[in-house]
Image 1 (cartoon, rainbow, N blue to C red):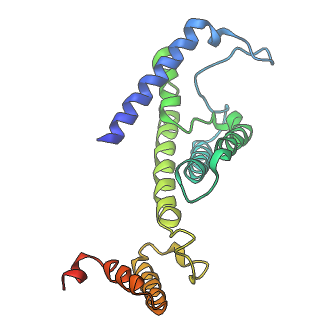
Image 2 (image 1 turned 30 degrees about the vertical axis):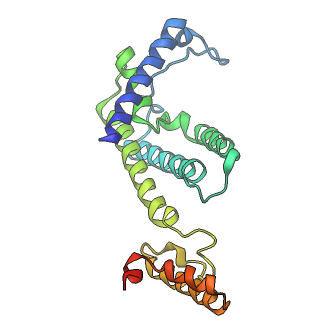
Image 3 (image 1 turned 90 degrees about the vertical axis):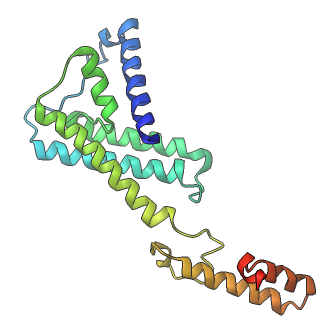
Length: 208
C-alpha cells in the first residue's frame, strides 16, 4: 500500500513538472545544436527493439544499484559523497545511452510528457520503456538486499571469511559471535560482567 502512494505522488509530480516547463516555455527553447528541446522520449531511428530493451534495462539496473549503495545502505559509508556518485553515474549513463534508447529509467519520466503533450511512441517502444524500468529496478532491489543489505556490520564480520557475508541466513554466525562475547566477559572474572552476561542471554534464559 505504501508503494502505491509513492507511485501516485511521483506520477502527479512528474506531470506537474512537465506542465510547469510548458508554462514557462522551456519546451520551446532550442538547444545549443539548434534543435528544439523535445520533452518526449524516443529511441534513435532504426534501433532494434531488443537493443533498446537491453540498454534501458542495464541503465536502470546500474543507476538503482548505485542509488541503493550510496543513498539507502547505511553500512556503505558514502555519507555526503553519495549525491556526487549519483550525479556522475547519471551523466555517464546519459552520455552512453541517451542518444540510442532515449534513457528513461523511470516510468514517470516517460509517461508524464506523453500524457501532457500526447506524444506516445509506438506500442513496442512504450512497452520497452515501462517493462525495462520496472524489471531492472525490482531485480536490483532484490539483488542488493540479498547480497549487501543483509550483510553484517564490520563488528560482526570479525573472524568471518571474505564471502561469508553473502549468505542470506547468517543468524547462526551471529549466535556464535554473541557466544564468544559472553565467554570473553566471563573470562574477565568481574562479578558485574558475569551478571551482565547472564542478563544478555534474554528473558527466556533468565526465567529459568
